[in-house]
Length: 521
Image (tube, rainbow, N blue to C red; front, side, top):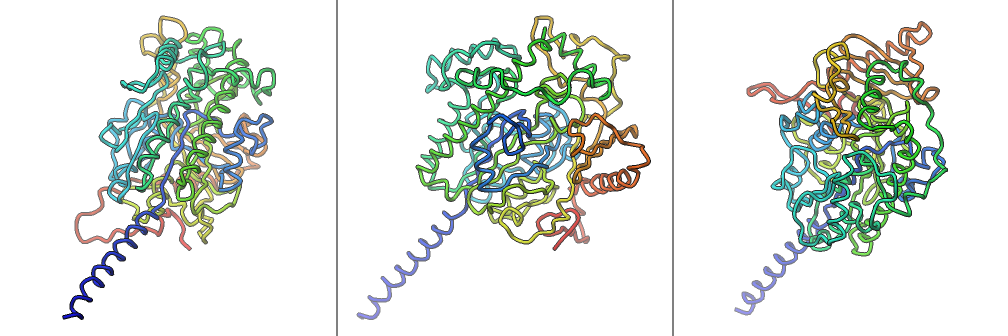
């Protein structure tokens, strides 16, 4: 009798211990915070030798984790890039190859949906510009370039006034310090919202996309950032004189920009100064955000990524924004990983892509990489484990929605198409002329090849020619290098043919470990 009584509480105790251990193991799942800026040029940072201290926090995080100077977007346009980031698939597979094809996105799984399936809470704070809707996340807190687009009872009158100001910029620029203080700027408000939600849900594993709409135009910023780099911004490496060398798309894009943004060329120095001030403000808010998470005790169990959806000419070729070509100014992105489990490796020379983020998160959360994902997991690399370095010897980026190039000979009514508005100061750089056709880029070490659907080629030594103005394609002295990169690009094109749907019967479908495309250990 006594022995029977003693067995019951022991069994209950054992069960309770098992549940407790299970809960602890569940809690040890790492959180993921994916910080994305919009239109941030990768080389404007001290860690890459830029003379102004624009990103002190990101530079410090890079030294404590890993950063990549050969990180690229899937396509240098917001919609296609973000869809590829969320699905791990290239635009040619998602079919979201322009900002007007996001609803056509095809994929088997996406980051938020898959995270939910694996026991994670999900949150979007900031810019979406993808196929996701408010039902896609447990916490949906959108912001866009012109403010917070949904009703928010926490929004102060000062915040509302600032959003009204943004709405009057017509997506271009403000040539004086923006009204209000940094507390009204969207990044500050987003950090407040993100910190509040994490504080309420920190006991559950979560994936958060903290997606800042800046430094994308409208180019504006408040003091002290407006004046922080006044008179200190170094000149761009190139100016308008090289546009003819870069080709018709660059020439025409600058012409449209001049129509839509009156006197932009005369305001270029001010635009660049404001752009860099906004980058510093963003970096300061990232520092504030991570500092708050450290106070909460969340930092130690969280993996962080700082990146961008694409870059900005930022004065290169005498232009702002993006739109033409696959130059590094717009195709290369910041890529800094730090936090839980990330080896303090500093600079890494591996070639990586935003397409690689989803499969990396999958493996770090202990889940299999879904079928249809084309990116490669960086988990072993980031955690300091052996990995086949040859797998990351190159990377591919796409541009264009297809068809033939639509040129000025076809039409030059930019107002009718919507690229330029009749009222002043609006210009959409992503338009029929800049986005038509198809091209691919492969980066491999110091070399870069761009090739289009007509067989036009560009070949650059990026170490000697970072602005890509000396096209070596077709020159005998680089014939061997050209052949190597053409073969590498062809390999990428074939390897990233869409996998899904796989055969329905009999045939075994084989994938490499970690979704590597080419090499294994």
